[in-house]
Image (tube, rainbow, N blue to C red; front, side, top):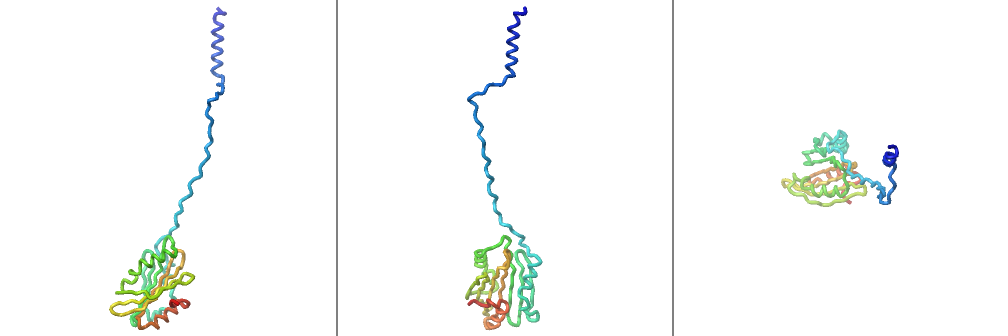
Length: 203
C-alpha cells in the first residue's frame, strides 16, 4: 500500500511546489517606454485693467491742473464726475469765452495709436454744440503733448479754439479746450501762453 501511493504523493508534492515557483522570463515581454513629461502651455497674457471710475485724486488733479489761470472773479467753474472721466468747465459770459477740461481714464492703458483713433472718432461729439468746426492746424511735441487748433461757428458767431491733449499717466489723459470769440484772438493767445507757456500755439 505504501509503494502504491508514493508516486501520487510525489506528484502532489511536485505540483504544490510548482505553484509557488516563479515563472521563467519570456522573450515576448513588451518593454515599457518612458514618456517624457510635456511642458505646460504658456499662460495667456491678459492686460491688467483698473476700474474706470474716477478716484478722489482724479478730481483733485482736474481742479488743480490750470492752477489760478481762470480767476474765480471772472470765470464761473463747475465740474462733473462720471464713468471714465472728470470734467471741469469755466465760463466767462462777458467775454463769451469757455474752457473745458477732462481727465479721461483708459482702464486698460493706451498708446499713441489709441489716442489718434479716439480723437478722430470723437471730434463730432466734442464740437456737438457748434454748428460747424474747421481744423486749422495740429502739432505734437516730442514728449507727446498735442495741440489742435480749430475755427468754429455757433449762432452766427465765430470762435477760435485751442485744444491740448496731454498724456498724464499710463491710464490717464488730460484734454483742455479753450474757446474765445474770433475777434478776441489776443485774449485766446494770452490764456494759451499762461496755460502752456512752452506750447501756446503750433509753430
